[in-house]
Structures are given as structure tokens and as C-alpha cells.
Length: 223
Image 1 (cartoon, rainbow, N blue to C red):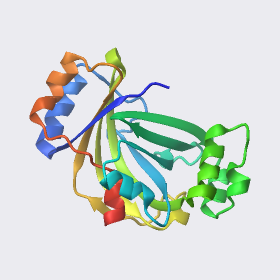
Image 2 (cartoon, rainbow, N blue to C red):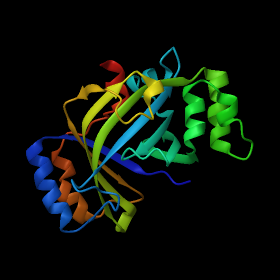
Image 3 (cartoon, one colour):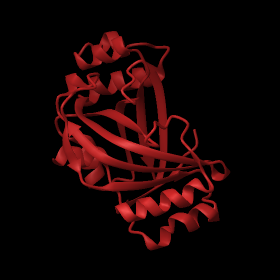
Image 4 (cartoon, rainbow, N blue to C red):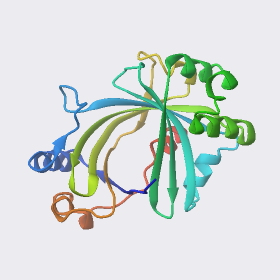
């Protein structure tokens, strides 16, 4: 599993509009985009009662990880368990598909039923850490994402906005779940493998923007 670089920047509405115009000339929109040019994302993050994930993020630890459940566009027929790790500034992601029944079992605390499967290493890892670290579903994060892809360097550029949250974790599969604003911000993310092509670097003008360590989970927990 190879690590990827991940850069994040705060941008305003004018920046976003300009960048969209430039990117559309050289990059392809994400194939899952809706009529508005993007798609909704809902994630449910795990943490323990000592806020292990929050503390690791705030303290800037060079090695950290977090688990989440995620689905897109309100479609609960395709739910993923994801583990996202950061090791010395490189990001790694592993994922596994869950059924709605498995997800419901997790939400209701039936972890043995949902996760205890020796043939599914990532599910078993979360199960072990639920037992050893007392991880539990802690916070839902919703947002709208617009994404573009550029083949050279395996680059993915995203605009995330309308970031909202809920602590009602049992409502994760309910598309009508009420949520509250978590951040009034648009976050530009640039993800790539070994190199960032000059054409993309020039478009986003990375050297002229303020890089951030923005975390949607963290801002949701601080609301």
C-alpha cells in the first residue's frame, strides 16, 4: 500500500469559482457527480471516551489513524468501512464494503455480529480496537464534495463545503437526519502520489495559499 500526499487549503467563494473554471479545462469531473457537479458524503467517525483521535490530531502526532463508515449520495446500498492513517506526512487508506445490516449492527452495538470475521482483516482490526481501545461511533459528518481527477500523478482535487454534523449516531442511515452547521468554510484538497504535475500546481497556485491541517471530524467534535 503506497502513501499519498494530501494538501489542504482554505479558499473563499471567488477562489472556488476561478479554480473550477481552470480545472475543467484540464481535468475530468468525478464520474459520480450529480447535476450540481458534485455529491453528498456522509461519514461516521469512531473515537473513544478519552477522545484519542481528537487528541492525536490536536497534538500533531506524526503517526495517527482513524476509522469511519461512509456512503455517498444518500445511497446506503454501498457502505464502506475505512481506515485512514497518516505516517510522516503521507496518507494511507484501507477500505472494506459493509452491508446495511452490518452497519445497523455496529450502530446498535452488536460488534461481534458485524465485524468478527477472520476473512476480513480490516473488520477484524476495528473489532480488536473496539475491544482494546474502547472505540465507539462518536460523530456524523455531512458535506458536499466537488471532485476532479488528473491522470498524471494520480491527482485528485476536491472542494468540500456545507459541512454539517450530528451526534445522533444511530441515525447514520437516515438521510433525513437533522444536522447542524460545523464549519462555514470551503476546503480545497489536493491528493497525489509521487509528484504533483506542474500544470496542476500552477492552477491551484499552492505557494500562494495558506495550507491547513483542517479536519472535518475535529471541527464537528468542537461544535
